[in-house]
Length: 111
DNA sequence: ATTCTGACGTGGG
DNA sequence: CCCCACGCCAGAA
Image (cartoon, rainbow, N blue to C red; front, side, top):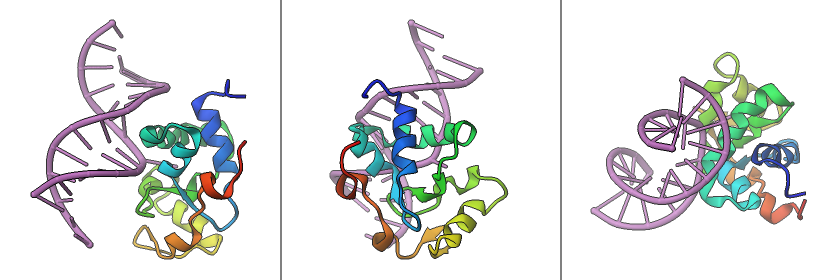
């Protein structure tokens, strides 16, 4: 229930991001109810890489920019993963970001 | 306990 | 469109 830690909540939402779709930290934060703490989502994602298999590459900032790319292995692993899903990325910027954007608060019903 | 940081967001200029 | 400053809160040192 709501007893889940903030980190686990972020993981639950991230796992439900559809293939080829992306979302923003703020969208997840808003869905979790901590809209003012969008940063915390990113922080949780940082820890996710060592906890469970979380598609953190599908989570970007509101600009659709791969801000966390630097935290992935190599230098462009995040972009590679996105392109592998059919997401076009140029200069760390998702092209059709608004089109493939997936808002948990809108498309995903409660959890 | 205090202090700083950070994969962000919003607002104002 | 871009750039700057502030808020926000959990975790690490």
